Amino acid sequence: MVENNNKRTPSVVVIGAGMTGILATIKLREAGITDITILEKKAKVGGTWRENTYPGVACDVPAHMYTYSFEQNPNWSNYFARGPEIQKYFEGIADKYAVTGKVRFNEAVTGARYDNGKWTVETSQGNTFIADFVISATGILHHPSKPDIEGLDSFQGDMFHTAEWDHSVEIGKGKRVGVIGTGSTAAQFIPELVKTGADVSVFMRTPQWLLPMSDFTIPEWAKAMMRRFPFIPNLFRNTGKFTLEHFFTKAVTGHKPPKFILETACKLNLRFSIKDSVLREKLRPNYQVGCKRVVINTTYYKAIQKSNSHLITESIERITEKGIVTRDGKLHELDVLVLSTGFKPLNFMRPMNLVGKNGLHIDDAWGEKIQAYRSVLLPDFPNFFLMLGPYTPIGNFSVIAMSEVQMNYVLKLIERWRNREFDELEPCQKAIERFNGYVKDGVKNTSWVGGCNSWYLDGDGDPILWPYTWKQWVKEMAEPDMNDLMTLKTPESQHSIEVA
Ligand code: NAP
Image: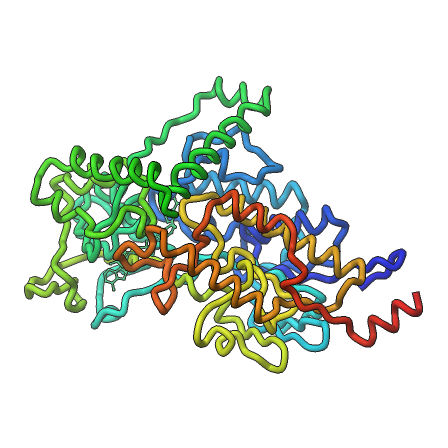
């Protein structure tokens, strides 16, 4: 901690060098904070976009909106950017802002313990870091969820999860590929597998609603215009933001006109994309549009109707060394099995051994229910900021915009610490309860409780998403309400104020 005109400069540990960790580092530095330790479990920056390399990986948020507000990119190749290009963007930003060189790569955080105003952070390399603040920027969907199906490990062919795609496995004509899962990820890579000529069997437990939003290549002349006139990418950005804010977000949070449009568009898409009425009924979800994350896609319905793809709706009984046995007793022999079975979103920063005040472990704190005040602050875990925590508005919006709003909130709190308003900060129990009640009221109107199971729900079946508008969230996150927070000054700090 460096003293400067009685204003303190904190030490901060940032966990993760993905989109949010890079942002946090840039913004901390802009605020004049340079004692930052960035710990990254893998060998490169990029998070999700480093991990997910499956064929066809792309972002379904318009590219110009899926960029930092302070680093527009006039060079996006497509309206919806592809994974490798997004990864390149983050690597470029991390280099430009001198973040990469400061990251401690291949150093996973194994534990963090709070004691008397300081965090002690331990890593897989056996290092220990002491910090005033910890910013957990570990992302939401980063722990692959593998299905609990009898015999899974007995399969003798090649098998991998989509977030751990094995590119050494050749997929093409003559290969029998099975896919378990039909979420956003599967909808992107199944068409690519079908294109290779492989025989693709898709094991679907629950159908999804699909919204056809076409991608297009941005021509060179348009990119040149964007480079010359920066207001053009901003215009794209604002148009994308307007659409997400006033259409998608409102449609799933109980606003009738956009909800009606979204429902109609998805239903018409199913009606006119699938020719065979039997297949169409198999693909028709029996829950509200938007209950699960709407899949933005124009290629999946076409692919599933190709002669080398097969939709299997009979449920899976077990997996054998040769393939998948369905409940009708049929063995579907496979050479490759792709697990497109999603992620464990409720892990957040875990399995890290996170211990707050009075030895409270995060597993015990969240034992009954996962909760966080305004997504970011946890009671009994002072000076710890959870980025993209529960009740962040993560349904069909840009997570980059969310992280920017949260980082701004975090910086305002750190600024108060720097001005010696407190040493220790955490939300008070009453505020947590009020906040929980507030979001619980809101979710009643949302599509997420519309008769489906999804990664949006916690163990009690309650959505962990922000149930109101984006505008409302931004407004409420603009300024921390200090009445909701408990602050404390340590005796050492009182002493240093007197000395200063
Ligand atoms: P997901 O949406 O959670 O889908 C998982 C799929 O696996 C579901 O179809 C699920 O079926 C199935 N499944 C899970 N366990 C199963 C089991 N034991 N037996 C049979 N089926 C099983 O996962 P995801 O497709 O990876 O997508 C996760 C999220 O990642 C998306 O919602 C999205 O937020 C994000 N994503 C974003 C983009 C983008 O473009 N921005 C692209 C890809 C992914 P049930 O439905 O029956 O549970």
